[in-house]
Length: 624
Image (cartoon, rainbow, N blue to C red):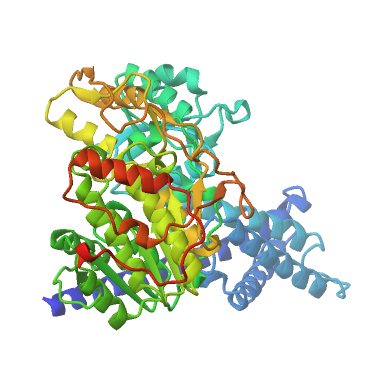
């Protein structure tokens, strides 16, 4: 099989070389003919189509000499070696420059002679005619080749593109250069009046957003592709609704920030996602980020199999760390993570660590043996309603588990604790426990030499347990979408934004503080449910169930008394966090009545602290 593959590749290579040789020979013949014909035409026009005896033969000989000279100069400039794409501006410049050089050499050779074989104007006029003929031949070849590269009309889908900016034109050219492509652009739309009737690659701009229906009817397109770079959600929703009314399908080109690693291709076109339709701005592209501090470092991610942890691992891998250690208690999640990172999941590498935060001794041994320099602590229980019913689990995992990791990380250079906006003025067990982890991290910052800080952000779109994931599952199951309250709002982030903030915190965060991202305006969950219901293939009702215990109608980014300070970037707030001595949590009893445990957590999350003893972190005896 490998021999057959190598043989096929060799044949393809030989075939390409043969085609290149034939093309070069064809252009050599064309260029020679152009020079001879140009000189003959120049002489003929000079004598007003009445040539003196012998003038035709002399013009032919001089034309052949000029052609030889042109080929020699072109060879020196490597014009026939495929240096520039055929018909490109660079090739036009090369051919024009070589023509001028050749004509000048011939003219200089004629001027000293009193008895010139041809008129002195012949090199100038003949060279100009030769240039026109050579460029015409190249453009004709390019046009024919471009037509051959277009998708097959019989097998491709006719599409309209909305947006003829750089991204739209890049996508259009990519479509027109893929003979096996699934999309054939038959028209375009753009709100810029200066682009009306513009033609790109032979594809015409028919109008703006108000002309979608007419353009669909006129071109027969059955799909509209939205190709406006970094458009706001309102425009996407408007174009989508106008498209669906015509009966055409609607697809989008991802924002340019998602395409920074490669050129725009047809495979980038995808179905619209709920994140595209949300009425909030994306701020990731506005946050400068350097991952140089991660390069070559030993990095540990706890909760690596979760939504945040797995994306964090993927982003850290791009920074070329010295070692990436991925810790989780969920072996299936580790299996999926390794598969996504390396395309294999044998679970035999030292980078995967199966351990539970509740096992204080195991965590201590792992960190002592592996000696991470930077720790991203993403492991936590996060389902608000379940923790409200089982607050003892929040104590054992979120509070004591975080304390185990902090106690073992006394010598790390940087520790980033991943928190939640529910820690701001908390009213739920999840919020209480995460606020306590912020305060424990602040205490570690006051005791240990490294930098210890927290990151606080909102709900992550499409993470496990997120509202979007829940709605998708309800739609697939044919169930109504359940919303707690018509007016409930939440701050929503993409997982890329969340991880970007975590990495940003590792760069600019200072000891003992919490970093909070300015996430714009909160999103009404009822609007989100309506948008998802509209995308469903069947009618989906929306049912309001009422707020559950521990839920807020509106989340807060900053708690009472917290001062919004943005010293390094206008989109990132740095909030001071009061420290909490670990001895304060030693009295927690996770096995007490849920109401009692919740009350204790609430007191600790808000408890003011005085001067703390100069002692290392200590875990409660019940956790060992």
